[in-house]
Image 1: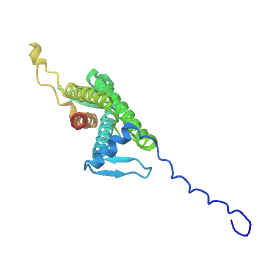
Image 2: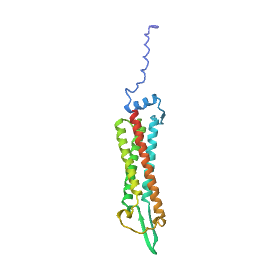
Image 3: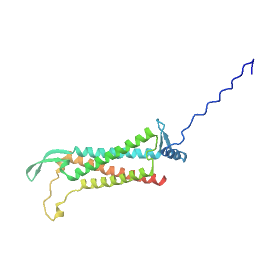
Image 4: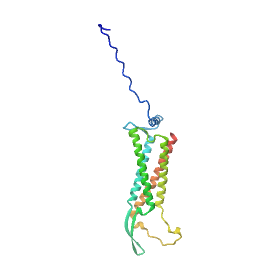
Length: 220
């Protein structure tokens, strides 16, 4: 009371800013990994990238790059040329679609490319939108592990089938030596060789991704 006027009580201090009641399970897992000493990287969007996430994303990019290269080089394998066979000029037409093995290789690499692209899109949406790790749960890790195993085996079988050379001696038929058609179809043979090499390299990348999946499962 001052000069007959009642003094108004001071307003109460504002309450502290409310914090979220709970974090998502994936975000808690990422924070636990950081607290346990695993190297982490803070993205510009506020998400947390662990060392394991960086390895997974790198392997996915390599898997997609090698698969795309193997497929692209094979589908451009075609050439028209001529070869001399015992004095006769033979017109040679070569194209990847003339061989079932090459068609199988293109189909496998196309499937692997789509699979890797899908995995990258899912991982990117988790990092940028949900602010969660690349692999949010064990169930997801098991699914990815199964896909990597299947694709690693498919890549190996496609590369082996494409690199196989038919030998008429196995049928019991004797024949004279055939000419080396790759001298006339050098561009075609080069494309096939490069495609098969990248197919085997892609097989190694998917096998490495499967190993990384096992490491993640053993530590979570």
